[in-house]
Image (cartoon, rainbow, N blue to C red):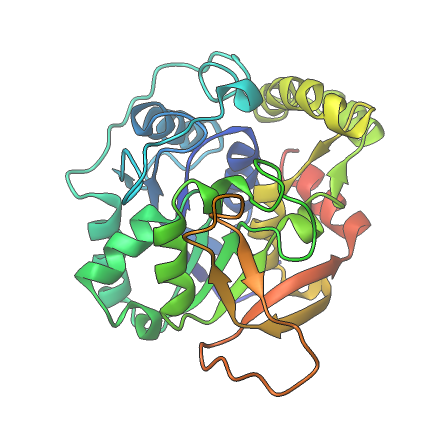
Length: 315
């Protein structure tokens, strides 16, 4: 697919096992120029997620990508981490070599704003962690939705149960104020929520195929996913795992994989004692009075093709 136009992509992430696989998916594509990676708290502390981003970019063959450390906590509330899902080091307790590189001096928000200004209309953004860095970037550059071509967010639970609370998904509930600011800003935005990511899974058969792929990239990633599959076995009842962040990466660079979606303004509940952090979509069959720019909510993808592409990225 090298004949495709080069895509300039900025990744905001909290690596994280599924973040790692998303980075592998993008790094394997020669038509994707990863112009920067911003890190944020979430799956672990921002110090750990930043260190992981450096290690992963070196593992996946993109050691020269600038990595910028971002927010260490949400805008308002205390942070919560997900070590029980991703392991003590964020990568399933799989050790990677110490990184050769180090973070740049700019913060994640500053790096994103500078790159967007330098590439007006030519930068795509993938956000697969809490949206704190993007909210801060909007404060630095209110024109960011005009400068960014497209934003794909992994987050939310629109018409399905949450994974942290009954109505809430981890990335959104980890900083509801930031998420509300991003959804209100007017980005050309695709939302890859639990509605689709909990139905698009790496099966035990797929995980076994990955174990048979030679090379350090595949074998390290297989080890990450073994830990992840053990966690998800308690949810699914069998050895498989949801591929939240890799699916969002695929929606960004392979949009043909999306077979169904709907468009609706998204709001984030900020006050409910049981629903704070809920992603709210008013889908009543009438003309919407909500003037907020609609997001495209992905509801169906070509799962077999996605899983094939994901495996190919690790070969």
